[in-house]
Image (cartoon, rainbow, N blue to C red):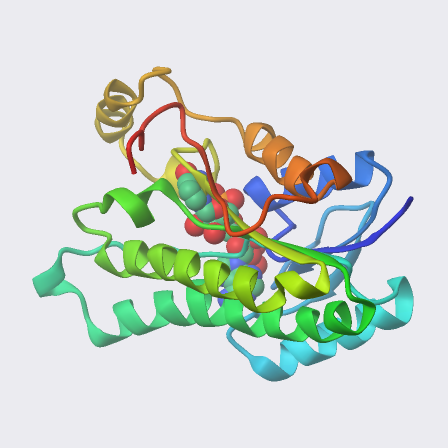
Length: 234
Ligand code: NDP
């Protein structure tokens, strides 16, 4: 059955791979983008998740054109790496506002329709860094760890209404976000990953597709690592 899906940040990277995987599985997929030309084949809605008004407008457009959101993948995220003593108030607040508060905004809006329908699937894209920590990424790691507490609270709050809420925690994935790293940094990361390589975005998408499927109906509040073994034990 074709469901109405929203993937935030579905215009590139991991989000685009998720959007493609769900569309290939037969779903109708809306994606958000902020600028430029969004990829074809999806309902593309312009939306910056730091702006509550734009989030509301995006949902209205999706509901009009595709129906209420039945599957939400909160994927949009940013980094602004800096060592603690050089990290500005804005470096910290802006990453939290996008990754954590932005997730809150899109999830809250989707939950309204899901609660009414007494069914729904919410998948949040966190990071192995939220559990392991990462020097120079205190803002990002805090935001990604926050997503776990947020998801687990929602799993408890929404479970009795047939809504699942799970977290996927990718390791290092080959996208624009990690392409800014130097060859040396990339090599040192790969050395720490038991599988000895970066993930492809499609490998994250496959897990999201599973969590959004009927087969995953009894999984909620879970944090699923897709990290090549990097975070084992966390
Ligand atoms: P990219 O940098 O390639 O893409 C980021 C996406 O998020 C873009 O679609 C971007 O939209 C969107 N986005 C950023 N800020 C906002 C905003 N304020 N409003 C709406 N959309 C926004 O990153 P990845 O694909 O690598 O990452 C996707 C998710 O996966 C992120 O949450 C990231 O933290 C997480 N992750 C990534 C890992 C990696 O190694 N790459 C590892 C673990 C987790 P736009 O095109 O408009 O900028």
